[in-house]
Amino acid sequence: MFDPSAVFYMDKLVAGPEAAEFVDIEAPISVNVRRVAKAKRVTPEDVTVVVLDRPRHDGIIKEIRETGARIKLISDGDVAGSILALREGTGVDLLLGIGGTPEGIISACAVKCLGGVIQGKLWPKDDAERQRALDAGHDLDRVLTTDDLVSGRTCSSSPPGSRTGSCCGGSLPGGDRDHRLDRDAVQVRDGQADRFGAPVE
Image (cartoon, rainbow, N blue to C red; front, side, top):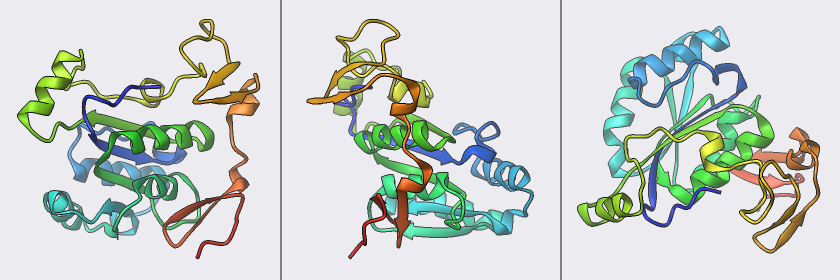
C-alpha cells in the first residue's frame, strides 16, 4: 500500500461506478458536478456532494453551492463519506475535499471492493511537511489513483503479481474474489459504515 508517512492530508475525489470515467480532481468543481449529473442522467441540482465540515473547505462549499448541487456536511469519517458516494441508494453522488491520507488509502480499498474511483493529491499543511514529502520522493503534482493507493499485492514480500501472503499481520487467501467484499456486506447508516449490517448506535 501507499506509504503516507510524509504527508498526513490528501485532497480527494470519490465517485461511484456510474461517474467513475468522467470525473477529474484537477477539473473545476462545477465541471465535476455536471459530469456526475450527466453520467447519472439527472440535473446538477439533483447531485449531492459529501464534504467534511472544516474551515478549510469554505471555498469548496461555496463552489458546490454555486452549481446548485446539494451538500451533505459530515463532522468526521470521510471513509464512511467515500462509501456513501460509492454505493447506490445513499443519496450521495460525490465526495470532495481534504482529509487524512490514511483514510484515503482505506477508501481506496473500498473502491476496489465496490467499484467507482478515488483520485487524490497529497496536501502538505506547511512548508516543513512539503519539504519532507519532497525528501521522501513524492511528486506533489501527481494525481494518485486507486491502484497507486492500494495494489493487488498483499505485501511487499509477495512475488510480483501474487495475491497471496500476509499483510498487516493478517493472512489473505488468493484469488480476485477474496479481495472483494460482497456489496450487501457493507451497510451505511446515518453516515457511518458498518461491516455486515450490525446496528450502529
